[in-house]
Length: 198
Image 1 (tube, helix red, strand yellow):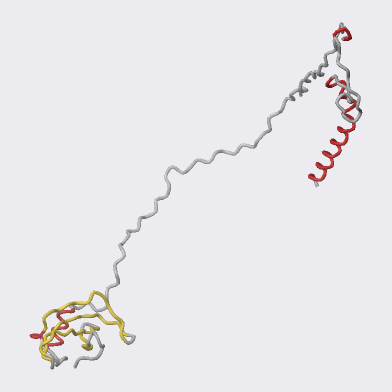
Image 2: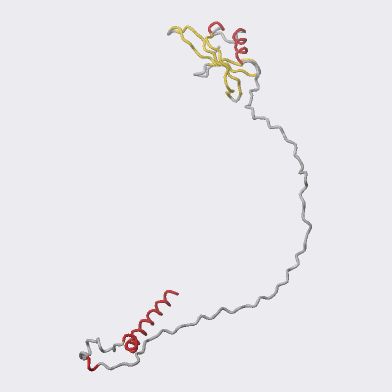
C-alpha cells in the first residue's frame, strides 16, 4: 500500500513539474521557454553590444533563511521523594550449618559369589577323578577366568587349563574349561564345542 502511494505521489510530482516548469524557467535560468524550442522556429537574434540594456541594480535570487527556534524550556517541578517502607536488613547467620561429610567409597567391580581360589578348586576336581580325560600331570597351564559367564541361565566362575593328550593325529595340547559354582567344579567342558568332558 505504501509503495502504491509513493508511485502515485511521484507521478503527480512529475506531471506538476512538467506543466509548471516553463513558467518558472525565466526566473530560475534567465532564459525563456521558447528560446530553445525547435518547434517554434523563433531564433533569437544575436545580441549586439549596443543593444545590451544597462542594469543598475541586478536582482540576485536569495534563498530564504530560516531562523531556528529554540526548544521550549519546560520548568522543572520539584518532586517529593516517595516514602519507601524500610524493612530491617536480614543479616546472614554467621555460622552456617555444617553437613556431615559422608565418606565416599570407590566403586568396586562386582565380585563373583564364588570366592574360592579357582586353581585350587580345579586341582581338587581333577584329583578327585571328576574328569577322566586327563590328569593333573598332563596339565601344562592353569588359568583363573577374569570374569563370570552365564551358561544355560546359570552364572559360573570360569577356570581354564591346557592339557597334553594323545589323539589319533598325535600328541596335542587341548583346552578345557571348568564351570565353578559355590566353590566346586560343576562340570568340565570343551571351550570350542561346549560339550562336556567326562
